[in-house]
Length: 371
Ligand SMILES: O=CC(=O)O
Image 1: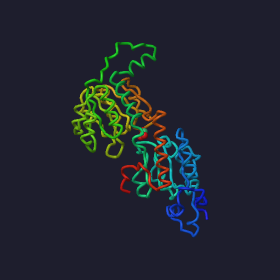
Image 2: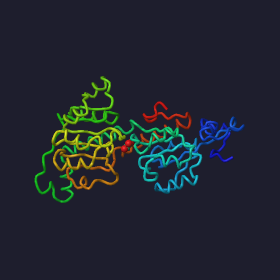
Image 3: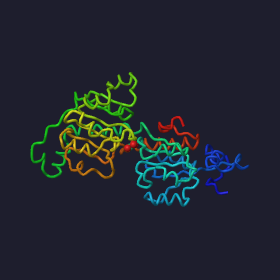
Image 4: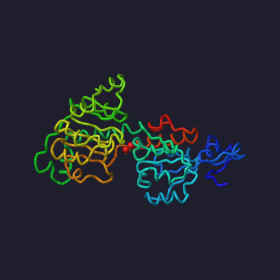
């Protein structure tokens, strides 16, 4: 019988996916041999492991690992439809693997074999994965919260300081052989004593608050849920309403996930409520801001400068952001450090390991906590 699992005697397969669970997960009839033999599950690996090699070896000792040969969505769907991934029970995916699969949406899920029960996403933001479609198909999803906090907040502070100091203008002039430019550059601003508004007070927002405090900034924040008083006290962060946050900050840092309710949460109306000359930093997701409205606000001087690591249609960048010298840009590098990538891989692999051995990852996405 070809059910996509290799049989092994139990002595050789400590802790692997028990065959009866595996069989019931793909709806196969139980047979008399299940009690004595275990199966090796198959895992679909969508991007090579770059750092956590010894942890990945523990997965390889538990599972057959399959990698796609495709490099674009159309080919990936055809490869899945050909049965190349049949029998896979779990997927290990990354932000970068979107180039192979496109968004992990209902079409991808329906083309992959129905044996898939788990997706380990290496990353904190999982807006590339249609969690509702996964839930409807009984597929668990995990992400890697916490692992990205230092890396992303460090870049956020760099963008904040750089935008406050108008660094892109002088940096471009210098590279252009024009020292500080053709006219005296505008003076920058020090962060000390300025109000930093943080929209989204999860792990990255809190990390950003601690670091900005070290630069003498006053912290105000708005979040779906208010933090407990001890955390607010530790961060010296004042909770305010959304409009109050917008109206009262000298700089705004966006640190919230992209969902249908946060898409374009900063648009024309919100920008007009902010102090003239405000500085904005976005290390979260581009679509949290309406880029067209941002471009207008930069042109009118309502926003004096921005530091952006993320964009609405990556890797495309709005030409008026690219051409504006008051825009400090980095190409989605928030987590792009050896240490952060290592931590992300370790947690994504741990989630996969937990799923294969216990049926449950440790950091399941919040929408599925009650699943
Ligand atoms: O953007 C990076 C992440 O969501 O982890």
